[in-house]
Image (cartoon, rainbow, N blue to C red; front, side):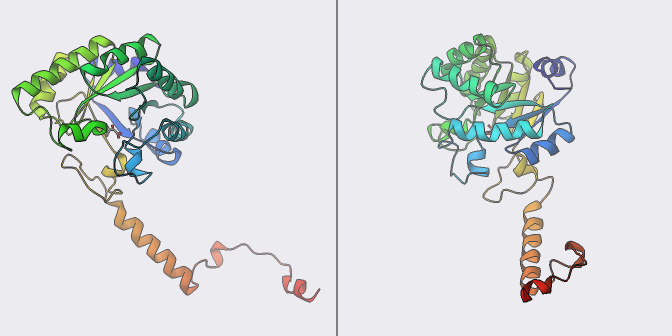
Length: 276
Ligand code: KIV
């Protein structure tokens, strides 16, 4: 049965921790659904992980929709959140609703996510009023990381922490059903988690959030460009993949692959064809 927003909300109420992971294609979302991950995020991190950009900034709505559709095809029963890319909601409520609707109508997502604090509360309200469930995202917000002085921990000082707490409260008031807390001190994440009724999902925000999210390629050790401190590599697949590919290429060169068991046979004498 397909998971719903009500299921997600009930998890916080019942004290059940929420697992969330990124997915960008059908083969991975099929695996994640089989593992009963609670929520899938079609993150704009796909810009770096899948498309080879240096940041999430260049990612377009069309690219997000293309990947979100594939994720839904692989995971028909999962709760899927589509990430609004940079430029999809900063130009006003009308554009935000138009783009948010695309995630629901074209890719069959259950909700959208967007980055920012007080500045995006109006947009969050407009989306929710239009019937689009919204997940907020504060702390380190990668789309505007340069304005934050780079990929740095946010809310270390008390004034900054107060601002983040106020933002979380305002986003909840604006109608967000959940919030991602990225790269904030664990104690601050704990305070925010206590202060809001919506589930908090941490990434680099300690163990006291209501749930956790990671980039799947990071936890599998498949993204070698950089590994943030908060990532635990549950597997180290990049070397395994490389070894397998090197072996394949060498077997192709030597002729040992494909072997007889990988080939199709017939009783026909095809050499006759050359004599016709
Ligand atoms: O784009 C993304 O993958 C994200 C998560 C890491 C929170 O925003």
